[in-house]
Amino acid sequence: MSRTVFSRDPGSGVPRTRTTVGCTLLVLALGAGATSCSDDGNPLASVPYDAADQVSFKGPGKDGGKADPGKPLEVTTEGSDGRITDVTAVDATGRHVAGELAADGSRWHSTSPLAADAHYTVRVSTEDEDGAPGRRVLTFDTGKPLTKKRLNVTFGPKAGTYGVGQPVTAELSQPVKDKAQRAVVERALKVDSRPWVEGGWHWVSDTELHYRPKEYWPTQATVRVRSNLDGIRISDRLWGGTAKPLKFTTGDRVVAVADAAAHQLTLYRNDEEVKSIPVTTGKPGFETRNGVKVVLAKEYFVRMRGTSIGIAEGSAESYDLPVYYATRVTWSGEYVHAAPWSVGSQGSANVSHGCVGMSTANAEWFFDNVREGDLVKVVNSQGDVMEPFGNGFGDWNVPWQKWREGSALTKTGPRHEQTARLQPTAT
Image (cartoon, rainbow, N blue to C red; front, side, top):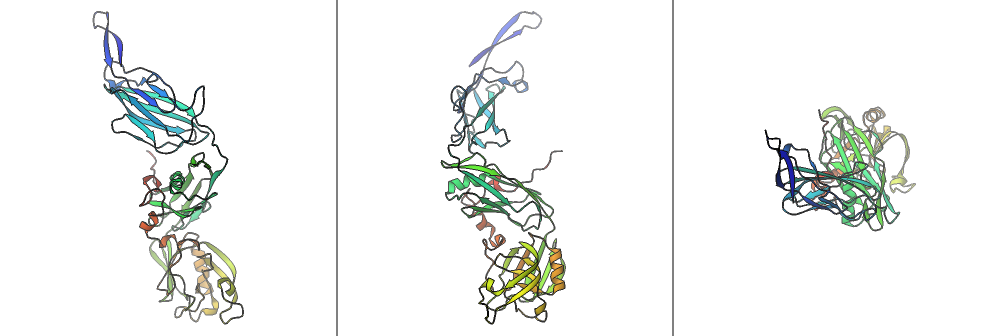
C-alpha cells in the first residue's frame, strides 16, 4: 500500500511530492477499522499513525451486536509490508486476555477465554516496513451466558494472621471433573505473595482445591487470593461466578516437634529453640500419627469421650474427661492438650489415646504461643502418617513433585502464572 507525502523543497518554497510504501492490513476476529502511515523523518520517532483503515473488526455482529464469549479473539495481517508488534485486550474490571503472537508478527490469538457480559478494549500496535509505528484501539461487548448455572468460589481461611503452614483453600459450588474444564478454573484462581514464593494449586476433589508453597510461607508475608472466573465459560452448561477476594498475613515461623520416642515436644520460633516440654503420646493401638500437621483451632475447654474415636462405652479403654488448653491438629480429635492425669508418665512413657499430653502449665504456655496455621510435627511414632486431606491439613506430607501432579494445567504441575508472585512496587 502506498501513500503520497507533501513537503517543501528547502529554499524554494515549492511543494514537492514523494511516495512511501508500508502500511499494515490487520484483520481482528471481532470488528471494523481504518488507514494511514508514518510522518517524514525517523519513523521510530514519529507519532503513531491511525491504523483505522487497516483494521477489520469481525465477530461482535452487525449494527452493534455483541461478541460470542465462547469464541477466541484473533488479530491477523494481510500483505508483507508490516507486522503486529503487540496486542493488549482487557475488560472493564482490569482482567487481561492472555494471547500468543507469531514470531513474524502475522497473527495474534487469545489463549484464555473471554468473559461473558463484559466490555473489552483492544489496543493493537503495528509497524510498517520502514519501522513506523501504528496504533488502533477497538472496543466491543460480549453477550450474556446462555445458562444461569454459575460456579462460585469460596476462599479460605478467613482474613487474619496465620502461621506459615496455612494452606489456601478454594471450595467450588459445583463439581468439576473434566481436566480441560478444571484447567479453565485453575487458571483463573490467582495467588500473589509478598515476598515471592513458589507454589501451586492441587485438586483435592471435584469441588475443592488447595494452594501451598513449595516450602512454608515466608514470615511476615502478605498473601492475596482472587478469582478471575466471573463470566468465563467453563462448559456449555456452566459459567464462572463470583468469588470474594481474600487477604491474610503470616506471623513467625513456629514449628513444634513432638518426638514420640524421646517423649519431648520442642517448640522452635524462626528456627530457634524456645522451649522443650515433657510429653506423652499415643500408646500401642492408639499411636499418634507421624508427620506434619497444621494447627486448626485453639479450644480452651473440650469434653473428650472415647466413643468419638470408636471406643465402646464401658470398655476398659473408655474415658469421658474435661480437657483444657486444647490445640486441635486433626478433625478426628487429635490435640495437644493438658493431661494432668498422666504427669507421672510425661517425659518417660506413651500412655495417651493418640493426643500429645502435657502438664496444665505447659499446655497453657503452648496454647498461648501458637496460632492457627502453625506446625506440629510428630516423629518417631509407630502410628500411620498423617492423611494428606480430609482430616485437617496434611498437605505438607505430600512431596512437592507429587503436589504438582495434582494441578490440572500440565502433566507436571502449575504453569508460571499459577505460582505466587512478588510484584515489587515501582520506585
